[in-house]
Amino acid sequence: MSRANLKIPGAVAVTAAALAFSAHGQSIESGHEPFAPFKIGEGLYYVGASDYTSFLIVTKAGLIVIDGGDAPVGHQVLQNIRTLGFDPKNIRILLNTHEHFDHAAGLAEIKRAAAPDVKFYASAADGAIVAAGGHGDPFLKGDRFYYEAVKPDVTVKDGDKVSLGGWTLTAHITGGHTAGCTTWTFPVTVAGKVRQALDLCSASVLPGYKLGKTETYPGQTEDYRKSFAFWRSAPCEVFIASHGSFFNMKAKKAALDAGKADAFVDPAGCRNFVDRSDAHFREELKKQNP
Image (cartoon, rainbow, N blue to C red; front, side, top):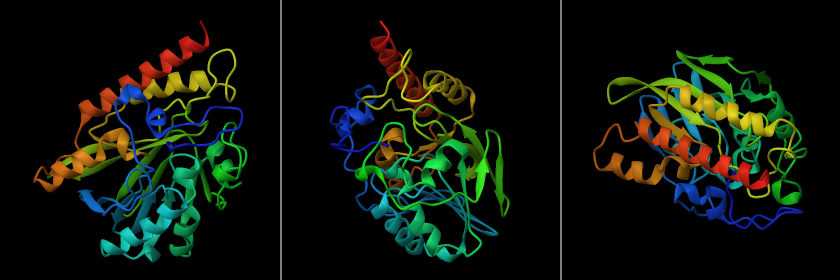
């Protein structure tokens, strides 16, 4: 989640720059401006908006979509899939990184347009909140953050694999940003070489989150620690994430357009993102627990 001027009960108004956090040296737009779809690797396409991401995987047995953005982005995802020449009716699997509205509010529209036997996969903690349309989130409360509910067809645990048409994606529960935040990893061929892709859920500590002695949800602080340990250990060659700003999507797209076929192969950028995010988490933890 990362959104401009959010109204959070009992907390501060949140700016886009704060949510992208200054440690990244970035700010973002509102997030759901239309963005032209494009190919990242063999069978892997970007179909999201200007910052709220969505990824399309084309397999021999149908389509996989990761995340739906907010409600306007859900419509854009379907249009982007059609623009690429694919039919949303062939979507067989729908995956989610986390339950915040800017990644889950578009899921219902996408699922309606998908194949009748489409399966929606989500973690237990976040899937329960998506099934309640955003209700039950321990931090984001109010109509601004609620959306059309989608009940998961399959609950994924840490290490579970999701396979379709020769592709296999692995779910990693990387809590902290949300209790069931899910990072997805999978191999993909880019510029003729098989690479390990990592779709990072989110490492952000939202302004107003409580860490340490008092937590936004029980166990949140330790969840962040475990997640940073995983992200450091996991192969991350093709670095993608729930927000385009996290992996410098627009700059990489410009490099791709200029002829750099492996523009999204960025293990150093992945490591730097994790390091900066961890430093921000530790700084916030220390500030709240002097």
